[in-house]
Image (tube, rainbow over all chains, first blue to last red; front, side, top):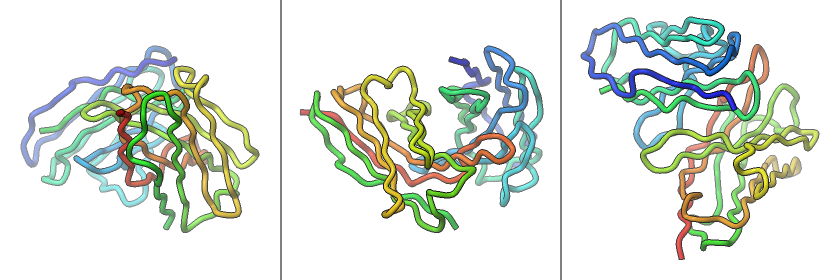
Length: 105
Length: 121
């Protein structure tokens, strides 16, 4: 299985901050990397797919970059509704695997 | 707008079989380019992919669950289902169904709200 490691596990930030979350795969996954946001008691929602493509309806302050084994999710200017957990997920092969999550506080 | 809704018992006894159904509305599960999947999340923990099924009936399962897992589709009802046998407390989790969009890479683009399944006597 491909292991996905996110850092940090938690992050304290303020409204207006630029925030970066990193995700590392245990092998190259080219660009098969997705990012999700999950708010308490809710299902995850897709933010970024293919490492850098913005899902329809997602605000442009979210962006993704990277290829191979190293990826980043950036929120350019944190908004109150962005305080949530974030997960990366590889779709290079099955079993699909997720990072352990980053809680933005 | 595609919507998914999980249904099934919220409480299952140890050693019994967990059965869940996902009903899809706003789009046919028979369309190509989409797999249909289950993901679970124990309380306070991360996400674990369970498996996926395609309209052809082809399935892929997480090896950690493969020996206990089966999935089915009912195109007449626009539903797909999960059966997990010999459950233990470790199977207690919120179970989500989701659509996998395979155009330009695979991703879970629509999710159900999730259903909590507790394994307890």
